[in-house]
Image 1 (spheres, rainbow, N blue to C red):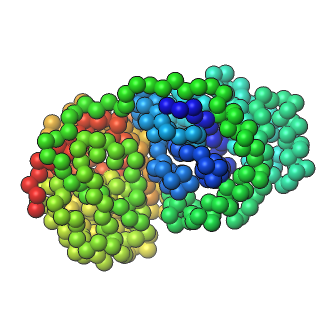
Image 2: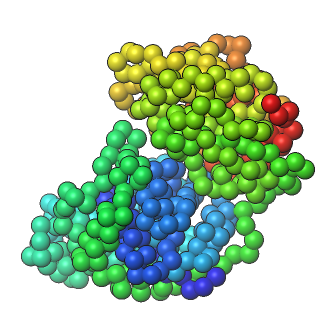
Image 3: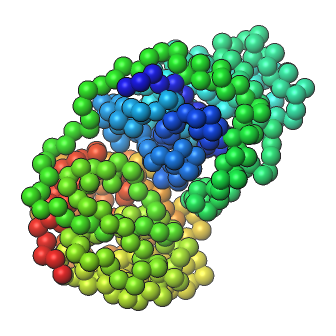
Length: 459
C-alpha cells in the first residue's frame, strides 16, 4: 500500500455542508492529478454517488455498528490500496452514533480506527469568538481523537474569518484551514430522503466549479500534509468469506435505474466474489428481464417518484411477478419490496399497481415512518438467514404497508430498541423487507442467496 493521505470530514451537526466540502475536496484533489478514494461513514446510499462522480471510483461505506472493526479496516485498505488520498465523509455530528451513550457507528469511532485526522466543519454564520468554545469542546470530548483542522462555513467575508481565526488560535489546537462563504450555486439540492442523486445534479462543469471554490478558500496543501501525519498500518487479507463459490456461476439481475439505486458497493462486490455475474436492468425502461437469470436483487431507491412509469411498464411487472412465482430466488429491500406489493398509494391517494407478489400495498406518508439501525435474527431453517444467525442493517422510509396477511411467512425476528417484531416476508423463494442489510454483517446470508440462484432452474 503506497503512502496515503487520509482525512475525515466531520461536522458539528447534520446539515453543515459535509457532503459539499467532501465532494469539492475530492474533485479538487483529482484535478491535481491525485488518485482519490471516497468513503462515507454510516448507512448512506446517496452521498457515495457524489463521491463516485468526483473521484471516478466507486464510493464506499464504512460503518462501525453494522460491521466489526477488522472488516472496516480491511474494506478501507482494499479500496484505498492504489489511492494517493482518502477522503472519509462523516455522518451527522462527529460524536453521533447508534445511541446517546455509545460512539458505536459514529464518525469519531471510525476516525480512531483509521488513526485519521478530523477536519471539523463548523457553521459560523452566527458566531465569532464563540466558535472557539465550540471547537474546544469537540477537541476535548474524546482525548484519543485528533481534531486537527477546522473549516468554517457560512462566513460573511475576510473580516468575519479573521475573528474566527484569531479566536481559534488563542484557545484551540486545531488549525484554521480557511473559510467557505455561502454560494447558492455551490449548494447541493435535496429531497425527502436527503440530497438528490449525483447523476441528477452533478456535471463536469459543476465539479470544476466545486474544485475551484474549495481551492480558492481552503489551504489544500496543508490539508494533505495533515492527512499524512500518521501512517496507516495495513492489514493482511480481506473481509471473511465463509462459503466457497458455487459450481455454476449464476446470473443475478440487479434492478438499477432512477427508481432503484440504493446499493452498498460492498454488497454487490460480495455477490460477485461468491461467483455471481451481476446483470443490471431497468424496471422503468426495459420491457423484459435479461435472459438466463438465476435470481433477482431489487434494491431500494425512489419507486414513489417513478410510480407511474413503473406501473405503466406492464410487461416488466408481469415478468418479475412470473419470475417470483416460478420459484426463482428474489431478494428485495425497501423500494424493491414496495415494487413487489400490489401497488404504491401516493400521498394524494392514487394507487399505482405494481408486481403484486405480496398481498399488501405500500402507502406513502408525509412524515418519516422509520429511521435507524436494525438487527435481525433468523427464525426459519429454510431461510438464507438461519435460526440464531444475525445480520445488521438500517431503515429509512416514508412509507408503510397495509397489514400483511398472516399466511405470508416471516423469516426474521427484528429487535429495534427492544421491541420485537417479525419481518423478512417470504412468498416461495422471494424474500422482501423494509430493512437494508449489509451483507458483510452476515456473509452466510449472501452465500446462501448466491447458492440458491445457482441451483435454480433457468426459465
